[in-house]
Image (cartoon, rainbow, N blue to C red; front, side):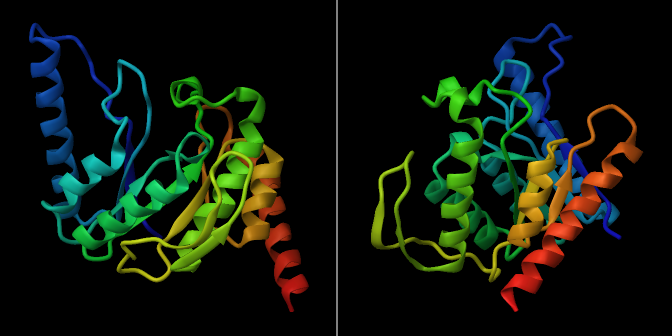
Length: 227
């Protein structure tokens, strides 16, 4: 069993400091908490991704890289990377770089996000909510598995025999699928053979058991088909 912490890098706005001073202090406190988690022997620390005034985690890999330089053992993860509104090439490059800085301690959890502000911010339509994620996850996994990529999709320019660098220390770089309560998401993770990260934000935990069973069934069917 592994034990870890996820943070959204929330700002409290309850002091008399300027916004800049408050943000600097709260970021410093967050990095200290990650260092303390490393010293305490926790296994992983995850940073979320939001694009709202009350959070400081719009660039989570920057925070994780700063933490990587000050820690030795703890794994550093996103929680989650909003892949639907990002470029998979840059996502891979950022986390590959983090993996190098941390000497092989990086991992990412990718999902569609529980907030939607990233979609209009980066020019995407919510009507493509699911299609964006399916396509971008396909490209991200392709990049992880292949140094030279040929790929074509709907939402991003095609790649034709393009090499993507840097390559991470870990092979393969760990990629988890972050899911909420959508059955299709659980089944997708199982079919792709990806580890599952379940976000239980309120509600009763037992209601997720059928969805986890669905994940396992999809994984078994996928393995049987592959054989």
